[in-house]
Length: 503
Image 1 (cartoon, rainbow, N blue to C red):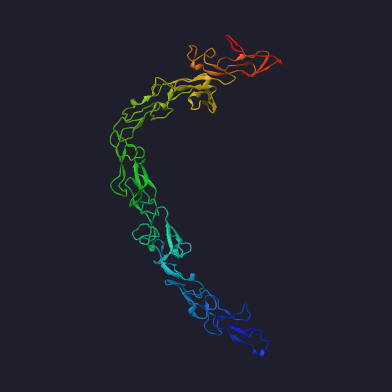
Image 2: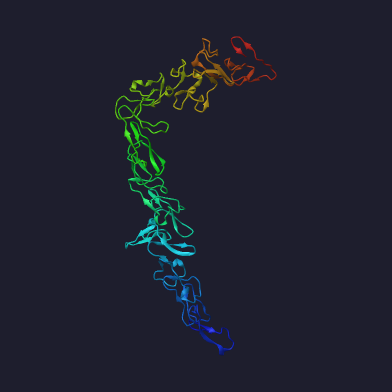
């Protein structure tokens, strides 16, 4: 019914008991009882094992540095050798080439269908505690034995070799013998073994980690080994610029007041710096151009001493439209009733805003003949602080978000005239509360307003000519030209009455 290990029952299922016997398993086969039971049928040697003779022995493990992934191996020669430069350590009976670990600073890749061990790139080499080197790319998590990750982002090609595709800030990607970065497809320049993320020194910088080398820090900058910078002269402006044959560098384009740009002669820009201007001058770039020569103060500024300082702003409530002012007395005072609202360095009278219930008027035909005039009654606005402002001083002629009542207009920037009022309002432009032509001696600019007629006790037919009239007893009025007779069927017509208006 059963045989001991490495034997099988023969013949299996025979009816003639005289033929029964225990026979040793053949090549590539063995029989081991399961859960303490004896064997009945021989089975193939497991992966990683072999048996070369039909004897009562078990299958033997493939020796060190070999492996076999199939079953039923009948010879040790079927155990495949590990790739050159790799081993299984002391392990035997290995089933896959994955068990072959590349030695030292090597890692596994492929040449066609063949597994090989290739040299570790410089940037993936690890220094072990014994002073030897290992390869971080040989570990699945790409780390050195200490757990420290290999610097950079590495991707694996179809042949199993790794390619360094990017480096972190402060490192320069190198993949050529010249210490530069070239395209992986550049068969002349690219070197697998030279790949590394090279750490820049604190006295260097790099902007494009994956394209450029570490550059020497310019004189006018304090560098930190990455793309960050601290200007030596506060306020100097630096931009990133491509320099042929060098790469992306920092270029000095402008300096603060009383400094000018000194570019130097080195192509890598290492001599760039801001040099202080001399007496009575300052330096500002114009329209994006570099500043190389110190120039006179700009509009709205003056400088009254030959010192190494920038030009000073014209004080609040003054302006200066020219250039090169040498004294504060050249800054022109704002018109009476206006201020620059605390702003200094203004260049035009346009910066002078009229106060409270005043608005700006230009007269005399010159842009600088400016005055602030009183706001007409109908354009006054009540602000939240219980004070008043003038709606004619706003761009859209509004009090806050509410449009002024009536149609206000002016020629160029002269005084405003109230031309018409909406239905239900009486146009007033005299001290007596009536409406006259703007050329009439009774006309008063400040009295202009649209007076709202009372809803139930008044009416008005011609808003721009008449005053609000008392509602007749026989009508129900609504403050405008509409009417409802008290007695239905009574007839009413519009009629001009001298000294009163249209009734």
